Image (tube, rainbow, N blue to C red; front, side):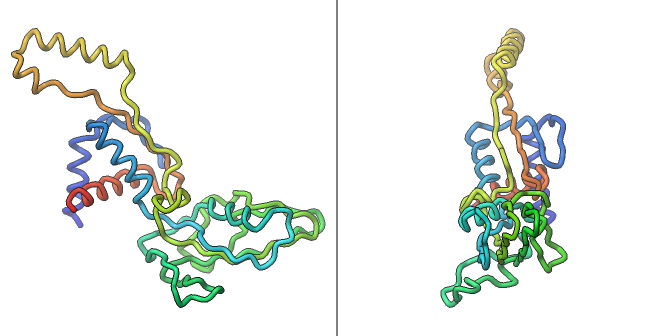
Length: 244
């Protein structure tokens, strides 16, 4: 494990430069690689880091104005704070019946929801989802699922499963990840500096010293993982995939 961490740190020391105001959800830094490598890192972040997201829902009762399909779509957008390493990837069991669809304690997290609109009606929020696991929470408690009118009811059971953004964007750990090239003015300044250096060096030495300007790489996390953790995980996956 220490060897793996060292490899990631070695890659970061070699290719990552100045950072700009890191927070838990955001990081921005200079990346000294070719555009193709930066794009590979971006795609790895979006599509290969596992998270947990609600995938299956069984709606027992819904007398609201919102169709079942729309409610299921809202459930898929709720962020689940859980460690994916504790779970297996979900695969629908051929022997599973219509009730469980192959969901188990090892490959899923069960949530229940039962809300009534009462006399005045109410909003149904992500925080209304109940889970019997102490190590799992809904990250944002105030995400709106639907609105219930007076006397309306919503009751359901749903399951969060492990997967990646390659399967569906709801499993992606980032809201945005991209890179930009330096502004034209910065490029011109760097070219002038290189020309000044060229006057005092031989052509062969100048060839070695010329380096492309760094890319500015930006990561916005959804909040399930910190932006820096996402970066480290993506670098590890990138190094591992290159060996295969």
